[in-house]
Length: 294
Ligand SMILES: NC(=O)c1ccc[n+]([C@@H]2O[C@H](COP(=O)([O-])OP(=O)(O)OC[C@H]3O[C@@H](n4cnc5c(N)ncnc54)[C@H](OP(=O)(O)O)[C@@H]3O)[C@@H](O)[C@H]2O)c1
Image 1 (tube, protein in one colour):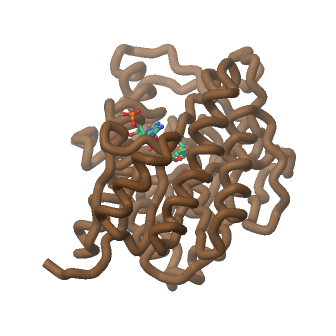
Image 2 (cartoon, rainbow, N blue to C red):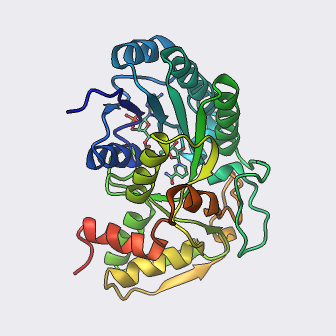
């Protein structure tokens, strides 16, 4: 066991957090996994206590309140966790002499770009909903609190743990419905870049332990619609249920969502020396890990 300063990982029991922890272990990077029961990002003394004990070199904050509908209903809580919490983590990191990595989202963009194009890190943010606005505020507060910071934007996560560690995500929902015989109606006019938390976790550990600063988009390359993503999962799992393509307007919602929030990953490829696997390959690896392939 090396005696270097650890990477402290907040939100460590979450879908992405648990894969960041796994990636750190796989790369033999000294780390400390901090769950919500140990550290609350909205509780500055709990952060100070943890960091003064651990003396981390880097703090990776993947904790969030990210249910988009609930954020809209409870904006105070969204800002408390995603913006003020991000600031408190960055301040506590600064006090401990650590750098800070904040996990953000494609929902900071308004999604008005034409299909086929993707947002790069220098595009201006213009969130459409409370969740996106609270995360954009988090990005700005982290940057304001600590020069040595990195914002990593991920999108449309799929990982073995599932959101909040309970096995749920879009792919699991689709496969469950398909196994029940359908019907499956999936949106075909919203574009995004799916992100495997296994791939993103490994990339985030490499970036966190390097010296990249500013903003980096961390997703599997190539964009698709939710319909294409679902159809591929159903086909790879060997299911024959039809997947109907429908417009987003089929599912009325009080919350506005970006039409095209695909993220460009050119900067990530340069920093890592190669792109992450394409989302179709990442999806196949995920389905294999979950036992969905025959
Ligand atoms: N899921 C997506 O598709 C998606 C897309 C774009 C960006 N992101 C971003 O990616 C990150 C990870 O998302 P995820 O899907 O891995 O979420 P997740 O599974 O819900 O994990 C979030 C973790 O944060 C913890 N947490 C919540 N409030 C906290 C607090 N006040 N203090 C400390 N920990 C707290 C949760 O613990 P408890 O469950 O015990 O409260 C949970 O373990 C988030 O920053 C999110 O905004 C996610």
